[in-house]
Amino acid sequence: MKRDTFFDWLPASRGDVRKAKEQIMARLDDLEALVTKIDDQLEKAAAEIVKTINDLKTQLGNVEIPSGAQAALDRLSTLAQGLDDIVPDQS
Image (cartoon, rainbow, N blue to C red; front, side, top):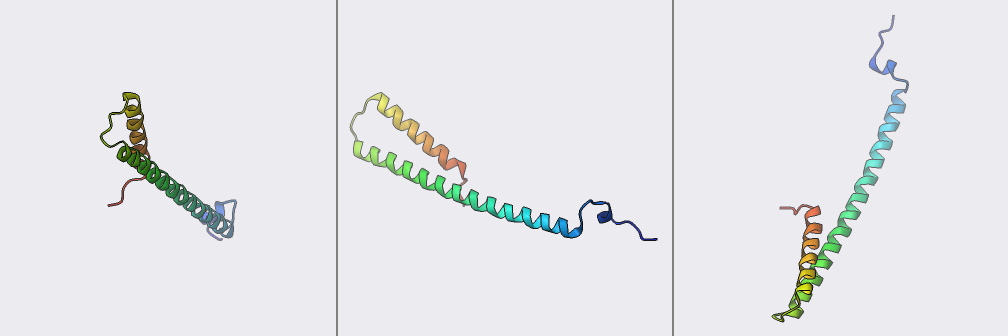
């Protein structure tokens, strides 16, 4: 009498399982590509925001600016730092 194996109890064949695994791995590759694309976009956006903030600060130099404008710059700096913190810096 033939002994039952683990795979005998499965409703799918080994080929079905292999095909499902290949499909899952392909989807993971797609996910990795999407995450990489989003990461690149966030890095670009963060760099542009930081550059704009630094350009504004340079243009303003030692000029006294209204407290509301300073608060807006501070909020932009905080937002830029938040974007930068989403993707950890690589050491």
